[in-house]
Image 1: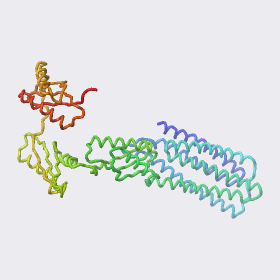
Image 2 (image 1 turned 90 degrees about the vertical axis):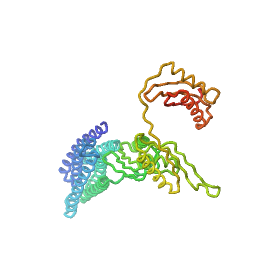
Image 3 (image 1 turned 120 degrees about the horizontal axis):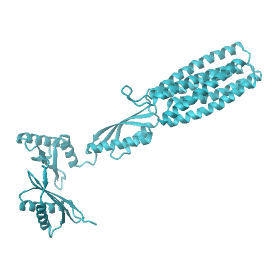
Image 4 (image 1 turned 180 degrees about the vertical axis):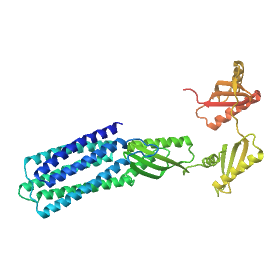
Length: 463
């Protein structure tokens, strides 16, 4: 809201300045008969109209998007700038016609005194002040309407200088000096209008700001997890930079990680552009470093299947390495599913894998019931927990697994569920730890048939 307050305050001050200086120049121009001064007064009058329009527009251009204006109201600033441009061209044409008429008919020069020079010097000082203030506010708020207004007042300085030059020529007896100065003012107004029209039209036709596409692409590519930016479009609506992007991300990433990439990309473009609105479309693609297992997991996930224990063997000879690919998979299906339906699911998975790797790949799918959620249970009695904890400690004695701790036992309708923590040498491989822990778990189930499941957690020794 502070940016909007700055814009409206500066625009309101400009209205008062434009009105006062326009009236002063018009009165003095009529009094001395100076077409150049009258032209500048009319130019300032157009500026007054422009500032009133600007003041009204900036009050609504910063309103947020609504049900009817999905991109906000920023384009109102461009439309207002285009309207002011049209008025400038009308004014420039009228001044040129009158200046030509006076040059052709030899109109007497204006009456020269100190008054018009004082008015013009004051006008130059006022215009320099408000052009600087408007330019600073336009840069801070990225307002196209204020930028156009600043350009008006900067051009008024050149116009006032041209009028002073014309009056000096008239004072030295060159009768055509005032009309020539009026023509120069008209040319400056037309040049200003052309510059404004070019900038405004480019905004209205959604031309991307210079360098914005490269800047946005670099910001998004710098986000970890982004493989490439497939397509990116940029357009300005008022002070907001709207960016539409299609971004390649690894197809092995889960949805929540892709969402994190999107949030990081939004933060990156906001840092680069300030007020930015990013549309992020993620396209999952295969990376060059994907393993066979990665690709199989993607196939299963795309089919909505739960698989585990994926093993891959590359069978070949010394002369023909990689001659045959052998894949083994554990496929989990609903425990109540009929065998025929489960077999169809397994066959479909096998065909999808063969389509990915070729018909020569050998796929073995082991069908097993989907592990149900653990049933509701209650903690076992402390005596029972102590008995099982002692047994676990005994089974681990003398082996590479030690320090059995945090033992928990819960009674459920399906049987007892045992959880425990243990420690192992930090340099042991995961497979070796798993083998030792698995041996302990099997001994426990044999000794206690009521134990339905054993869940262990191995960790390195405390330092």
